[in-house]
Length: 75
Length: 476
Image (cartoon, chains in turn purple, blue):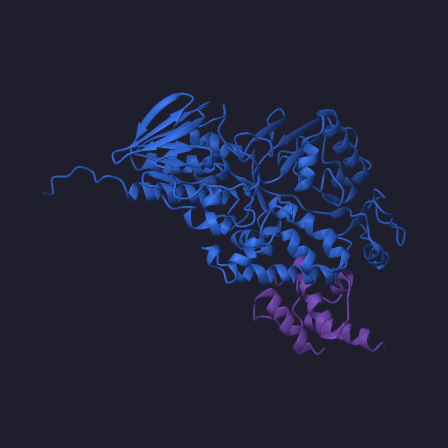
């Protein structure tokens, strides 16, 4: 899952095009309910099931893509 | 011109106010000995009031915010600072997830979840409002709800694609077919109870989708800050109706049972006698409106045997102060077992006392409402003590059973059961000659909320004024 993929998910769930790789999900008006929809989209695309706490620690498109990549192929 | 209004809730009184402002002689007939309908205030300490009925609002509730300002009232924010408590009978997944979670530092009371040691039925503490359940499963649930919500026709739900099928299906059937994960199945009824005071078996999928859309969507309806629960009316929402009624002709204790309409006017029969007017606005919930004998007969009923009361019992536990705040807790909890399926800090803004409001919704509301008062009190107090072990015995206990309230017949709003939208929807706002309809259930915008009630009142008043006989003029 690339940063472009997570950007696309953020834009769809938050219903705004104004998302950059460093945008914080919660600063853009996201809340826990919408956050779960990011996680279900990640799970559908990659099979990786992250917890809500994982998401709190990786709440930007850049950090989330990295977190998913680490889970798929642990360093 | 003279207009009678049946019901002195927000819908009826805002309609009456608008008519009176236009120079119409408006008389409001109210069955109870009080005004307010589904808003009601309880004085929990001298000068300190809480909402036993409708309570919350947000920025999108523009008519309500305007009315608050017009009546010289203020709003105050709904407090939601601190950690939440969850008593979800933690399933495997919940326990596994919480065992890896970092507990928030805000738990001086030591009531936090013990890592790896979540027992069935034990309450646990989590930062924020997110429950200790599988996030992906909840995300899939919200995806499904968002898809349904986006699909529904906002002004005419019966014109939604596949409307008949969506309306023939109960939400309970939809859950059975669509929700696989146990955490989604555990969480969903609680979510629906909070949002709509509905049991999944009572409502159609179309009604759920419509309701969520009408209230501004899932996120808006669910949110406190930035959402539909952001603010309260400082001092209680009941003041809205009391202040509106102060300048109006409101007759209390008049139960309307018959409306006769002719070409020249209407005659409304109530326990107080007969009244004549040019038009009538019926501003009461659909099940009660349907019980009025209207002559000539209505082309379609106002409610059916499937139209259910909103299932809400509201419990208020009063403490000397909001002690949970000292323990880093917001007062918010979500619980799989009743009676209190959720709790929220409803302490008056003046700081006089701490009030924990408990919501008993859905099927649990019916069970709880049938208990003896002593059992109701004991079980609510015991649950509050499990959730917040540092709490002393409450100094006050108030219970408001909206399910069995004869002149509301449910709260937050009527629940449209299978088939209801297809049969009732098209006639919901359609005047029957000189008989007009108001009430939050006749507003497709913010249906079931105070905002919907006000919008319906304004719509009905505008209709009546548009049909008003022209002021005598000498133009000819």
